[in-house]
Image (tube, rainbow, N blue to C red):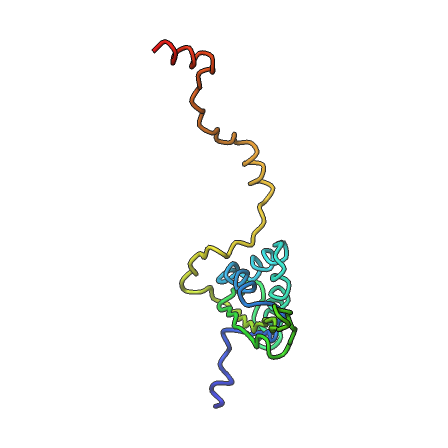
Length: 174
């Protein structure tokens, strides 16, 4: 038991429980920052226009503070080694009624989430695969300038039609 206390921890954790946001919304942001350095992830979260990035940014800062204060890790070269978003209780805590047909009522499901972030000194062994819904980065000024500078593709030209008078004359002569 004493041996495990003397070993230096390789990861620092932070938990966010009962976040008042659906897991799908949080997973989109979590997939975008998974495996990145903490510095890069904080920039992504700070300047993304996604509502779900605010609680994840706060949680990431908490994990970095845990690493620095509790585990004596250097905060300059930390990486996000693990991030998980799990569903919390969805409907039993916050009950809202939705009126339905013929005087009935149905419960609205107000979803919650539990998020766990682990930061460590070593980058992950394998880079996470890119997911389609993981795009939270806003377009930079340079990419917008490049897009404006390159001419847009022209639509294919339509086939020229004969004027009605010429078509009628051609049809009458035949």
